[in-house]
Image (tube, rainbow, N blue to C red; front, side):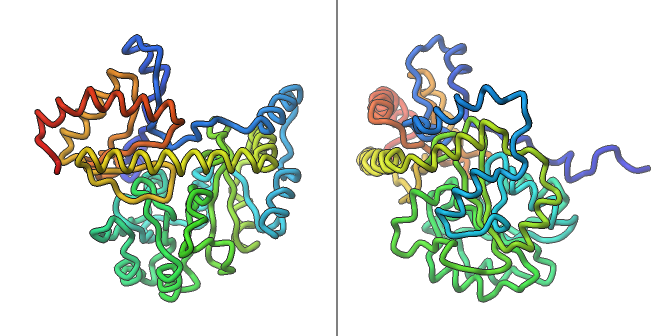
Length: 374
């Protein structure tokens, strides 16, 4: 007798988001809360994006432009593309869902790294695909040579988060070129560049827009550097054959009217993006140095977050829970199978000061319980 729910769905675990601010406020009765858990833009959205979204509220009784001409035209100008090479979705994860629905069948293989972005892994499992996860190198980077050896005739997708979440590391141009030399034409490579804006200044970062592979799909988002994660808007680039087939399984009228308008406005405000990157650079350096001075070994990151080892799952949860008492939300990484690590997003200068003040209260107890890290 057939089961009502397939095993590969029953065995899935629900994605766990970062702890919401309102929930912590209710639980602890706190008024000052710094959420440093979800890699959001601490400066908020661009005023241009707010203006576009506010004006669009008068039209929410109408369906949005199904083809998103205005937003796609802006992306075409920015990246020198044609509309048929672009797909939009509810965040880049929405497009990942289209990819799995259109191209990935049960028992086909997905080759990726261990401890990478859990959102895509859940989506791949949801269609019954087989995950081939390659251990990382000792420096937390993808082992592209080992990944290349795992590619078989049954490999449908190679997934690369570049830069990676939750480690903040990236594969280089040389590593990407090496990997592509081992990818057959029937295999789709997903380059998840959600943190592209933060990494693009690295001299050896392989900006996928400088390549033109027919089997590569690039995913980017307005949720991180552009600061409109709350309305969900992501975009993807690829060969028109792949994009055309993705449109066949895409939900109509997605992203929403408000998301399309917010993204359009955000693209027009380059100074806001510069302020975001400047704040991130300054606060990242300060955070990395602080963690190092306290005996932790943070992983060098090219994103808007820093991940570091605590020593054990118990230590991670202790640090997480103790910081909650002071109104600071960070992210333990048990779901990413890195239970002895936590991740801290870059906030505003005030939020980072709040974190350091909280850490000064928590660390003596942490050290007394778990010992010095130096």
